[in-house]
Length: 124
Image 1 (spheres, rainbow, N blue to C red):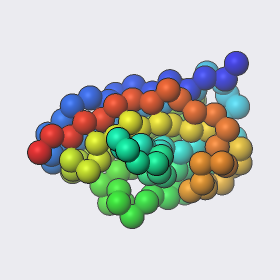
Image 2: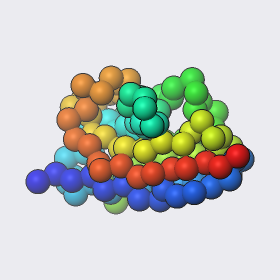
Image 3: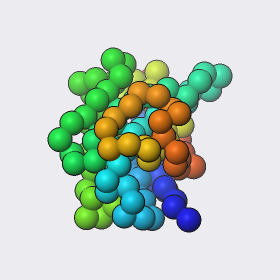
Image 4: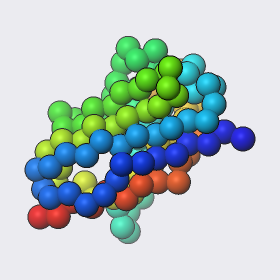
């Protein structure tokens, strides 16, 4: 069974940084795009960023562009999210997701594997 396991969440002050990791249990994801989504309390899950299977392209939501960086190490079956200049509005549960496709998508329904999520809390 394919599993995605996030780690690296925690409590950080505004302006600080965190790096999230997502370990995939299968090499299947080497040929698929991978994404990061987040869900704040009382809000719907939203797209944050994604990366194509070959590391050539990344895409971000407007709210995180310029502050967050998605990367992957296919040899380690691991996806990363480097988050800088964190703001209280970034407080959410962060989920990594495996896409059905090799190209990126902003839409939840294009991802068929999900991690359990990791909490990120940014204090003001």
